[in-house]
Length: 427
Image (cartoon, rainbow, N blue to C red; front, side):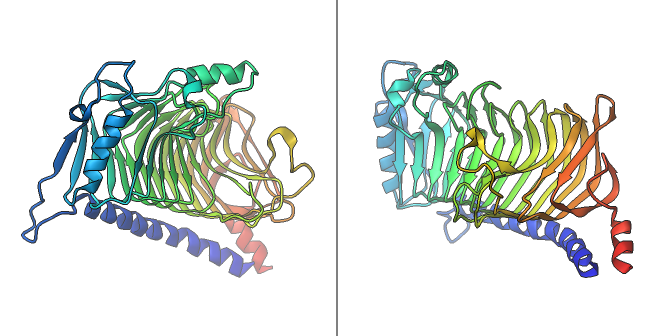
């Protein structure tokens, strides 16, 4: 027991140092890639600019598909040996769908948007496409400013009517890419996911505004899948699903100063969808606010066998306002009760810290940890937590979870305090 306690104390001390180092590493790489093309004397080589209007894009013409013009501008920027900027002036441009393929001859392409990209309002026109705007195998791409409008309301209405409908398209996805910066972008009303990073490395997203109604299905704000060294900063996200979701194979993530609401909260998972998959590791979520969301900070895994895991995760300095489940670990996730009833999750959850979590719960049970009976959650730390329900005491419910409390923790009921844990270990 003494070794067990010492291990987690050391983990809580070392993790902040690890994350500051990782974040600095990611930021340095992004800075370097954005300034590639520097001359030996330190000055920056002049960037070539490609205005989409010069390639045939029609501003404020909702009947003209400007996709080919955008892709033509991309082809020229991508084939340039110099840093390049694709410029979208202040206007609306109708885009059916567009794919921007790499690798390119230079590693410094900026999509500078003062305008708005608008998707088809008729979802049947994109029914066969997984993505609306897709970047594939690119290195050193920046998306700066602008608005993308997925016009998803028609598809949402179809799904809510109970009819057979297409799955929907992701508004913006980067896949198999690295050194990506998205800054100042507004994403509206995506059919499903707003922004997806799939198999990417060294990603920074900042000052984003992502919006869809609370009743819009599957409109995740930001999804990371098999992505490493990712930073999400200073953003506002309100959707009908997870504000941020960290999927399997995602390592080294730093999230700070994000406002979430409405939505399903900030989630690790779902994990264990497949029997053989990687996990999530080295995540810090700090200084975030959640208001009127279904969940606050959540870890969820399917209730069935898996090689997945979630470990070394820190939620700190989080404020909750009227959140249904402020702190939740759900290892019995089983939508539609298919392929998992009666099974235990194989996902191993360990070394999770909740520090300085304050606010109000919309339900009596503010802390819920429903962990796997076969692989209990281990190394859970509640440190300075105060959550109330209707100006009174909330409750905690923990099953198959092992850990301890540090300082004041309300509601109580899950773990012994650290002092008690040390006392019991000495007996």
